[in-house]
Amino acid sequence: MSSLTRYTVDGVTLLGDVHRPGGVAFAFTERTGGVSGGPYASLNLGDACGDDPACVEENRTRALAALSPAADISKLIVPRQVHGDTVVRLAACDEASIARAQSEARRGADAVVVSAPGVPVLLCFADCVPVVIVAEGGFAVIHSGWKGTYARIAAHAASALSRATGTHPSGMGAYIGPHILGDEYAVDEGLAARFAASFGAGVVGAGRTLDLGACIAATLGAAGFDPGSIHDDLISCVSEGARFFSYRASGGICGRQGALAIMGA
Image (cartoon, rainbow, N blue to C red):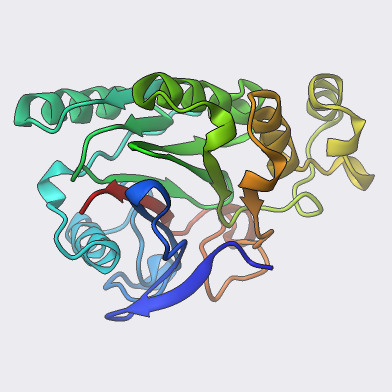
């Protein structure tokens, strides 16, 4: 049974939990409903892949409005993703706190933890794994490529969210969005061996394919999540080219879909 509902608002197609667990509205975007053209068509949310900045700004406005019509895009936190394990934290919704979090995120981060209402977060993807964690009183949005997965960035973000909200990971929910699947992601022998040693041989398949989603689920389980609260619908952005961007499938020139979240708006 799918954990995500697919729905469309004003042409923007989203995958999310419409029940807003923990009071959090979140969604993973698809590539339709925007204004970009060419390899970025049409809802490209990434501003570092060669698209027209004006198109990206309009696309972000549309995506956020589809998720939460009352959201203020001037408060949007969008990290410069660097494949690290830095987590930006925001616990207050005053102007100065938001500006500090936005500045910190722009310096480089791959996860944002928010425990303040009305502050939206966007991270962008085109094969790497998007993760949203929700708790009563807060959320985390995480970019987990192979480096972040190996560094267990999802567990770091969950720990920060636990401290911010007082919720143990066993009371949280985790949602893994569209990504390159385990049978699609071939890696070199050395990397496969590192992951097998760290996460178990089962995460490496035939032809040295690497299941990042399984690694993330194992990381969250070890951090205290109930296995039933870790949701991965196994949606491929590689094989679903009409719905999602994929860096690998496109040969390196493409847009980016997003993981968006906001609490209490």
